[in-house]
Image (cartoon, rainbow, N blue to C red; front, top):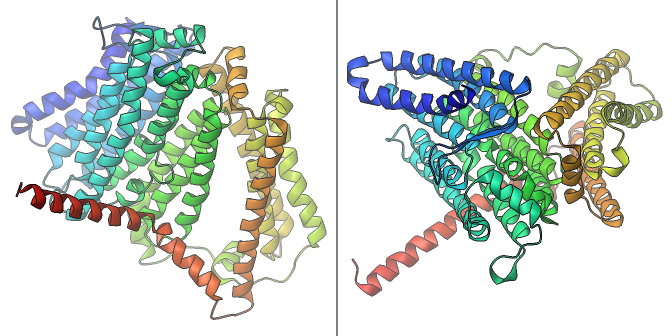
Length: 560
C-alpha cells in the first residue's frame, strides 16, 4: 500500500496540472480551487508517509519500468517531500489572492503544480535517468515561472540567465551518469552505491579515479543549482518574476545542491579531497554573499544575496562532513526565507508610511547612533564575549556526542558559531545601554536556546538520515584534513574574521568621529561592493562579445 502512496505522491501534482490545463476553459477560475485541494492532499500524503517511515519501515525502491522510472522510499526522500509539498501549499494559498488580477492566473497555478510534481520526482528518483529527467525539468519549468509576465523584457532576460546556468549545471550531472553506467552497467542508484562501496578504487576514462571524478562532477552541478560564487548571478537578478515564485525558488528550488550531495553521499565518502573543495567554495560564497547583501537597497535583491550566503553555508556544511546538518539547514532556511519573501510586499507598504520601530536602546544604537549613559568595563565584557559562546557551543555538542576531538567538521562549525555568538555580545557591549546586564542575559538565553535546539535537532537528523554510525564516521573522515592543514585553516579563518571586525569597527569610528568624507580607499571598496564585484558586468561583456563574434561569423560564411 505504501508503495502505491509514494507513486501517488509524485503523480498527484502532475495529474492535477494536466487536468487543470485540459479543462481550464470549462472550470475557469475553479482551476485554482482544484490546485489548492490537490496541494493539500499532497502535503497530507507526504506527512503520512514520513510518519510511516518514522514507525520503522525500511528503505525500498519501487520499480515502475524495466530500465528507468523507479522511485525511492527512504528517509531523505520523505523528509524532502514534506518540505517541498508544505512550502508549495503555502505558495499556492498565498497566490490565490496575490495573482488574482493577473491575466495568466490559471496558467500560473498549472505551472506551480508542474513544478511541485517535478521537484517531488527529482527527490524520489531511484535511478539516474529519472533523476536526470527531473533535474532538467526543474530548470525548464522555473524559466516559464520567472518569465510569467512575457511582456517584461527584463524578466525574460534574467529568466534566461537562470535557464542557461541550470543547463550548465546539467552537463556535469549527465557526464557523471554516463561514467557510472559505463562502469557498473546499471541505472539504479542503490545498485550503483553498492558497487561503489565494493569497488572504491575503480578507474574510469583516461585512468581517472571514478569516485573522485563523479563526486567532482556532482559537486559542480550542485554549485550551479545552489548559486555558488561565479555561478550565482542568476539568483539575485531573478526578482522580476512574481513574488510567490521568488518564495518557492529561494525556499526550495535553490536548495537542490545540498540535496544532491546528500543523495550521492556514498560516492563522496569514497572521494578523497573533493569535499575539501566543496568546503572552500561554500566558504567563499558565504562570505561574498553576506557582504553583497549589505550593500543592496532593494529588499528582494538583498534577500537574494542573503540566500546566496546561506547556500554557501549549506555547501560548506557538506564540505566539513555535516551532511545531515545541511539538510536541517535547508529546511530551516526554506521556511524562513519563504516567509520573508511572502511578507516583503507588506513590509514595503508599511515602511512607506511608518517604520514602526520602537525608540528603545536598540533603535538608538542602530539607527540614531546615539550612545546612552553607561558602559560596562571592557575587560569584563571581553571575557563574557569570548567565554560564554564557547561554553554554550561546547556544552551543546558534548551533550549529543563525545567525538568532538576527532570530528574536524564539528570543530569548524562550532568555531563559526562561537564567532557569531561573540559578535552578538560584542555588539551589545558597544550599545552603551543603561541596562546592559538585562540585554546580555537575554542574548545569552536566546543563544543557548537556539544552539541547544539546533544541536539536538541536527543530531536527530543525523540518526534519521544516516542511522549507520560507521557510515557517519566515514563521512567525517572523507572531509578530514591533516592536523597541520587544519591549524592553517583555523588561522586563516581567524584572520578573515578579525579583518572583518576591524572593518566594522573602522566604519563605526568614521561615523562617531563625525567625518563627512571617508577616505578614498573606503570609497573604492564601496564601489566594488555596490557593483557586486563587477562579475555581472564581465558576464554581460562576454555575452556581447560572443554575439558580436557570431554576427561576424555569419557574415563571413554568408549565412545572413
